[in-house]
Image 1 (spheres, chains in turn green, brown):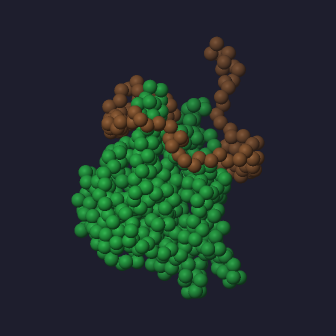
Image 2 (cartoon, rainbow over the protein chains, first blue to last red):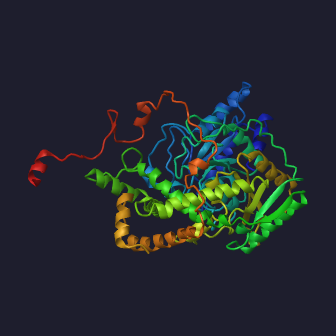
Length: 479
Length: 103
């Protein structure tokens, strides 16, 4: 049963092959078994005790001939997306004990269609990381090889889906945090266009970059969830009018007449030779389907990562200023004055990577450095947006690796921030420009580790990106 | 590598502290990160308007309509330090006798 995709489970529920209670029971059982493994995956921070109750309610609705598009279907949710009445900690000590006072719009919309939630998934603290190792609950492991990182920051979500501990999961993507773990765990992961999914109820990291994303083992599953969750939300002023009312069922894409750009900046310097080779082979597959694949160069893409590591920390330093012990979660009770409470709460509450980024953010926004760093980064971001906008008037998709390297062993980059940041080489530009991008599982390395490739499209081209990915999945070919 | 004075002034903005060992580590790492992001200076942006807001096509303003916010009882669950519609914090105003003693 757990081998079925989300759409497969939907059919099984409709055919009365399984009940939702049986499905949730199977995931709960698998979760319990994994906890007794010598190297547990640590995908979930909490498996919800009431998920079985919700499954039974969904089954009762089905018996009455009622229920929405997702009735009785379970999803896992990253620990930074709020579900009313559940803890939401962003895998940080500072938010331990914080109970969400309301649900994210995306959660409400999925619930309105009958979805239920299995649990909260592990992540890098406040979504700052590329390996899911910066978590106050300890790292999640890659289910393909448990000594390797699952990628981050939505590593728990990717791990849960790949290990069949959930059929589908929500994550968030500020610089690649859905696509990287999808690539490392060998599944599909979509970062929608900026504005496609409401961020109301997503605990903010970098507000001009954050998007909720979807991870699954099939592009159709992503289409199903996207259809249910997308649409304008008055509670998020950045949400777009664009909706996808008829995304599911998803049809494969006709590649003939499509133009796909293979970008030199993401395929040469700094890219592992095996990853490079797999990306080239995927380009060959696209050609075989009738697409025109062109080599292009867009030099400004070289600067996406340094640009991101100014803008994202700047926004984070502002967004995380609210965690000071006053309103949310942890407070150092030993503090005698207000100032001492702020400082000791934040000193004990935040982990090292969060401190690094908050520090960088405060530095680049401070008097004397603002123009040299932040303003310069905004200018580069504008240039990047302009260049990408121009490019997508001529092409349908951009093809690149998702990550420049295959999954790496746990602990190998955790104390080397610049090496960790380099993992985001091919993903941050999509957040800086708002473009939708999807990682799809392309091949395995010789040592048996998954490698994903990334398809990026024009704003709100999620449908054709997902269709392209479906064509790949349905082909069943290996490259 | 950043100097001690810069480290201290930015830490004051961050509202967290570091141990001496962490400080040494930080000075090196932050210095390396800043050197890395300074590669942006290689990009010619003289013709670019850095105000991204102007380059975004569809920023719409929402209507100025009154809406219901979160009810107080829902907010109360946020913290163990919520009392009579307020979040309580350590004393800010010193006791009169403490002030007298100091003066």
